[in-house]
Image (tube, rainbow, N blue to C red; front, side):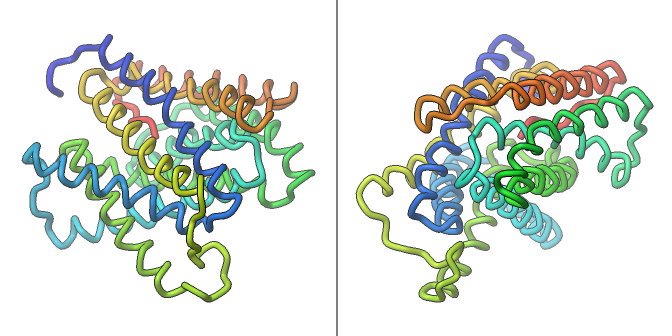
Length: 302
């Protein structure tokens, strides 16, 4: 790490938490008329156009081995699946509810770390994970009654993203953070763009691209721009402060998502959802603090 500057890292992470839900808001607005696959193409396409030249300028975009390219492709497929599930959920669910359910991801990552990375999990963290999942059920239950299986899409997002993070742990130390995100965005764009070409005119709504009209161009550009800016802030935060310091700040996303949802869509979490969010946040922060106390580096925030 290039010299710890915790205050700067905290400020950058706070900026990330404030801006990242903007991507979700733009995706929700675009989703009224634009297929989710097309939104994904803009999200990763714009990130590729910005981050690949930036990584080249930093001298960080080094040639990758065949094994590394395959790993980037698998990671890209997982992040595409995660983002696609989440953007699909946003068409029907309030932003704060969807993000709160997604935040069971640290608990899933903790369990996957034990299965795939051989990490030891004590009973305290297992209990915290169980309580966190109970909090998620409080958020899911009313949505499930109204929307059915759609309410489970943020949970699917959390599973795909946790798998993505397990693989990211294997490559993160070998690459500059900007280069890592550039390779991910490039691989995701390479995967999604041919799919849109193949399914054009097919009538399969998620992948049958349309010509955006009026404000929808701005919504699509907004998805890519806010995704790129927020992840640059995240890379900077991880560069200047330990993950254990900044990871709990990711829960500020729920606050900014709630405010955006209220201002743009008139959505506000009900009492049961707020209780569920509080349970998830409390359990998640405990897991992060426990990781730090055990001397392990918690996974970087999503």
